[in-house]
Image (tube, rainbow, N blue to C red; front, side):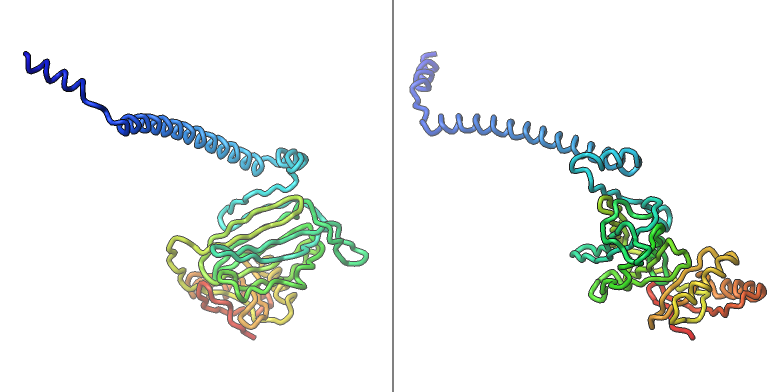
Length: 316
């Protein structure tokens, strides 16, 4: 018992170093600071989540409600509205029904991970002088973008436009990694214009529409997931023509005869042709060719085997 009392006295007489006391206090302070940091971080993440949710609702409202988009455009700073468009199958739609616009300018933008084509519109095309005003349009005319293969490409069809000033100075795509060619194709509708863009490799496409000023942006990225190469297809097509309108006449005739997939292409030498359709086998292409010959359409058609990214051969 006496030994226990001696040990207790000695324990009470041990001096605690000042450094130890300071470190205990520092540890307590650090723990409190850490707790406050975690609380601030939770509040910050919570605020970001709320903002992200609000932005999602806002974007969905803009894309889904034209009335809401018009209301926002009248607010201070709400003039420029951008909406992301969604492909339905191989086609995306946008814009509004207008008339008298001009496809004023087409530019390209290259970044490390993407390449973008910007299409700008001008308003109030001057019919007397056959020239655009140059004043930016508020809304793009109604447009359709259709994605095709053999070769991989898109057709941009814009209605409600009387002029295509941009066709005089189309951008040079020779240094692009993803974009191949861009060229105008003829149409017999005096209130519509079309152009084609081809691609050099498999890509993914994102289309956005901007208002005030009107702009349609087509951004392409290299396909991130491995895609199996498409097999060769058999094209039922016309001969090549230097005159764009000749291909358009053939296109109109073939569509009238029940060929909804007819399109106009430019071949490897820069000449134009109308393609009635693509077929998986040569036998299918030959059967369709026989049908059209029996209908006496008056158009000479040929069968061409073509790879996924291959431009049509020049056939005269």
